[in-house]
Image 1 (cartoon, each protein chain N blue to C red):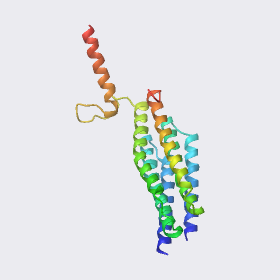
Image 2: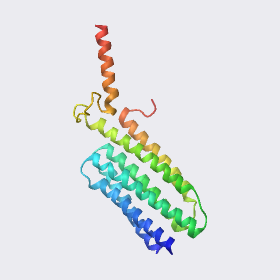
Image 3: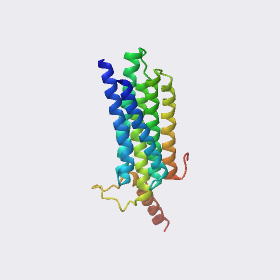
Image 4: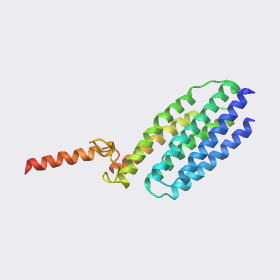
Length: 130
Length: 89
């Protein structure tokens, strides 16, 4: 009975978080804000569904498996990576390095640093050629 | 009780998939489309896990593992293509 309540609570929480994540993808106004909803809320929703599945399989069905933990681990490892890549794509497509707020140090934003370094090297080579 | 919770979760994820498809069709930029595709894959994994609970089998976990891997690789290659115009340099 307790396990049933636990599985049901996990399922309901996971459904709400999945719905909120996808609703935020439509609702939020700015692309960088929209990045937050799916990468955080939906990942938690999937985690809830997989935990519910693991509890159900172990206590009610009687066969324990590590697959859910593997999928959860994989998703929790890859979600930040994809989020970072999409944020980088957005920054490079829609912003120039000069539009962004200053970092407070003498180095530029990390994702634009290679561009700035290349410009510096090229200008140094030009100066040497002259 | 689990049946009702399952029904609730199924309808939530179904609605979430519809929202993602709407966002793929109508998006302000390519970054949002990639994000919506990534979310679609994650929601599909959750739906497969729920279907595994409904059927009482563990067969679907292999399928969701493969979907997770292909989803990650496709998202990364989409973003690499948008960034560099090339996937493998």
